[in-house]
Every structure is written in structure tokens, then in C-alpha cells.
Amino acid sequence: MHILVTGGAGFIGFHATSVLLAAGHSVTAVDEVNAYYDPALKQGRLSQIGTRTGFRFVKTDIAQDGALAAAAGNERFDVILHLAAQAGVRYAVTNPGAYTHANLVGHANILEFARHHEGLTHLVYASSSSVYGNDTKPPFSEDARADRPVSFYGATKRSCELLSYSYADLYGLKQTGLRFFTVYGPWGRPDMAYWSFTDSILRGQAIPVFGAGKLKRDFTYVDDIVAAIVRIVESPFVKSGQEAPHRIYNLGNSHPESVLDLIGHIERTTNLKAQLEFKDGPPGDVRETFADISRAARDFGFAPKVSLGEGISRFVGWFRHYHRL
Image (cartoon, rainbow, N blue to C red; front, top):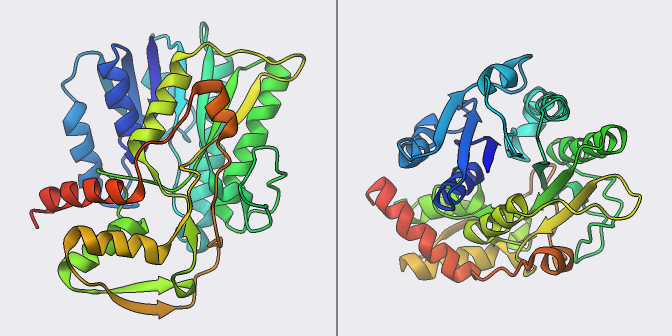
């Protein structure tokens, strides 16, 4: 298959592209390579795959009019894997415009491009556990209303799901939305806790801990996420009854652990003791995320294999090598 991957220089986009290429698919990746975090990390990811057979990269902002058509040129895609977005819950508090631009306008542009793209069979796009907010009973089911996100980031992701549903209903555009739950691993994002905690512990610096360390996250290792993504991309879309061809899946580990648990795993892996500074939590943080993954297990055999302890061990090994620590 020929696959268009947006956010191809991003954390999940890089890993997904690598596995898709290894499986024999052709990938055209697009990414703005913005400065939300160090672009050198994004360039480093691209350097790992830039010379591989079947790969082409285009630097562009998909939220700009005509950018996708220009990037595609005369190429035809079987599937679009839309992972590009402005990430981060806390950054949205101070810069919501970045989320409106990248997430809402970018997603709308993808939908328009997809519905006019001849031969396209499936649009797979990234959503987030942030859509569930604090009012959803754990474990979080895809059937929950998810209409009270506590972060602007979560609100944009839920809005994208609704935009996608309308395009599925109006135009028959086949789509699958994936709600990711705290994805972590090598080549990850520096704005996430597991990265910043590891960096601080290795450098002997204090760690700010919010919510008394009791906040829980359904930490999911990137290889488990990507295995599911690739299976979904490779599988023909099966429409259910008379419903619009749009479906949503949770992709999480289904085993939430606290922030203190996370710190403990990093301490054991590094053989170093963390210096903790307990602080009040910032707005937008949810108390817990917990994925009900029964739907993805039923339809795609999704079964996460990597525990948080093992995943953190792999990440810390990569982190030490990348930073030469």
C-alpha cells in the first residue's frame, strides 16, 4: 500500500512509519517540524528513516490551504494515517490558538483532502484519552459521552472526532479514530513526564510532582501502540449495518499506574534517588486515565505486552545513549 502519514517527524509518526516501511509499504510523510520542542529531535527521527526505500518526506503545514495537495503532487494514497497535531495539555492553557490552527483547521483540511482523493480506502486518525475528562467512569469505554473534556487540547480532539463523524455520514468517508493513552518510549516527547523525570533524576535535579503523586495514567509503550496502528491500517474497513462508516477505539495499556509508580520505575532503572517537590497541579490535568480496550482486542487482537517497568528500562537505555549520559 501507499500511505500518507501526517506528523511523520513526530514520536508516534516516526515509529509507525518505520514499521510500515519494514512491512513493505510505501510512505509519504509530511510534518511542519515546528519548535514546540527541539526540532533537532525531530530531525534525528527523520535521519533514521530518510534513506529507506519507499520513503518520501515533505516539510509542510497541513493547516495551510493547499498544502496537502502540493505535498501529494500526483501521488495516490490507499490510506491516510493522520497523526499531526499540536500536542500537550498544559501548553494549551497559554497558547490555545496553536491548537485551533493545528488540530481543528489541520483536521478539517485532512477531511477535505481525503474525501476528494480518488482511490482512498481509509482515513485513520489520532485522538486522545483527554477527551474523557474527569467525569467518565473508569475503565473508559468508547461508548461514554466524552463531552466534558477539562483541557482545551482534549476539546479539540473531541471536536475532530465529531468532524470526522459528520464526513463519514455525509460523504461515506471511511474513518477510524484512535484514542491514545499516554504513549511513551524511545524517541519520545521532552514535554512528557517520563522524559523530564528521567532527565532530572540523571542530572540530580528536583522533580515537580503534582497532585501528591496520586494522579494515575494508563502508560502505553509505543511498540504496542504501533502494532495496533499497523494492523488497523492494513485491515480493510468493515462497515457495521446502516451506521456511518466511522468507528473509535481506545489504545491503552488498561493498567493505570500513579506518578509515584512511574518515578519508582525510573529510580530502579537508574539506581538513583529522585528529589521530589510536591506542588499543586496545573489546570487541565485529569485525575486518571484508564482504557477499556475490549473493542480493539475483539476487532484487532490488541493485547499490550510491555509493562511500565520494562518500557521505562528501554527508554532510559535509549535516553542515556541519545544524550551520552
